[in-house]
Image (tube, rainbow, N blue to C red; front, side, top):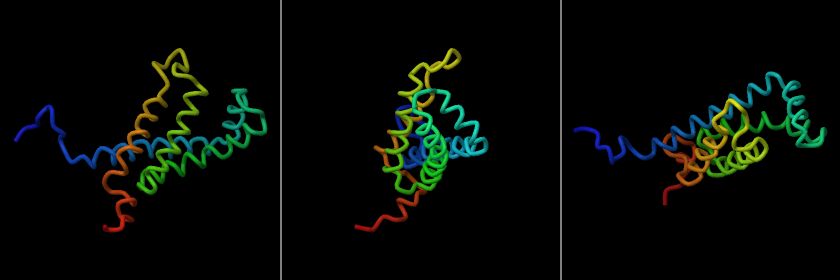
Length: 139
């Protein structure tokens, strides 16, 4: 039995599971790294000049906690559709703030790829090994 080039190599529930783990890990690590240097991150967000200073301070203070929460919930597969919607909104704001081509050294904004992964989860659901699947009530 060989691999057929036009057929999946495994069960379809693996795809959203893998996307959840990757996206959740990214959000968790991004939030934790900001929390390690919170005052520097607040200063950086204020420096963008997109928001008034008091709003930028609040945003920069709350964002890392939101990223960690989103990441952990994605990894666990809890409320996956809602969390994917929230992460999509957050990623879309990043794309709007920084643009599609944010710098000289970036091919394009990586948040577009993460946004596509988040959209994928909204449409596919949690996949395998999720708390959402454990919580399902039999019909």
